[in-house]
Figure 1 (spheres, one colour):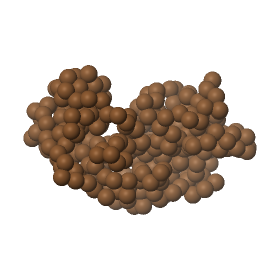
Figure 2 (figure 1 turned 30 degrees about the vertical axis):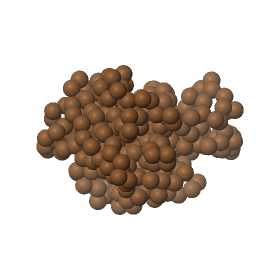
Figure 3 (figure 1 turned 135 degrees about the vertical axis):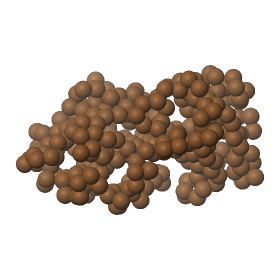
Figure 4 (figure 1 turned 120 degrees about the vertical axis):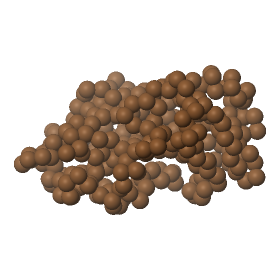
Length: 304
């Protein structure tokens, strides 16, 4: 069993920031961040567009950052609470002397406990009359507002990082590839006063992984199958078990695998009956699905 990587990437896309090397020092402000990274074509070159939703005492905030594939920042724009509270608007940013227009409409948006809207919104980035990126469920409204033409190259959703909170069970909505099916994901673990804690991960109420003797297996990885897609799960719960109470978070990475052979080797070589495969009618042979390499990174904080 390999050690949990301090930073995890795929095709040059960094999906875990420096907080993973010092999880206990993450501030309360950073706990209210959700970062979504999309790979897009901009001005003829591939780039990474990070959509960062955050929430503080002043209200909701939004940042959009554009990087090249070497993570060199090409441009950034912030939408502060004073503008965000108007629920709709636009802002300009510049990349390589070219103006880009950012439009948003959250007037009908529905929020959960986190900073990211759940539905009823759009966020659109346009360059030279072309829609570089549009997210949200109101895509038609975004195209009508901007009069933009669809991009010649479709963007890919490559990474998401968010923070979860709970005492014994915490959950989120998750998808494991670009434009993939959205699932209910729950992580369950009780470490308070338990001699032999057990970690369980459920997807749509089905147990896909169960790790017993967690005090000895506080870091590890295993591959499951979701919708016919191999997904490798990394976990690091050291701070839950041995860190200062209330300060440490656990980290979980769900990384879609690049080969079905890797899944087959993992499933057939494991002699641990506590780790269960995901029941699916999908085929191992379909390894050319779009968005392979997608990473979901969860920082899980226990509320005492």
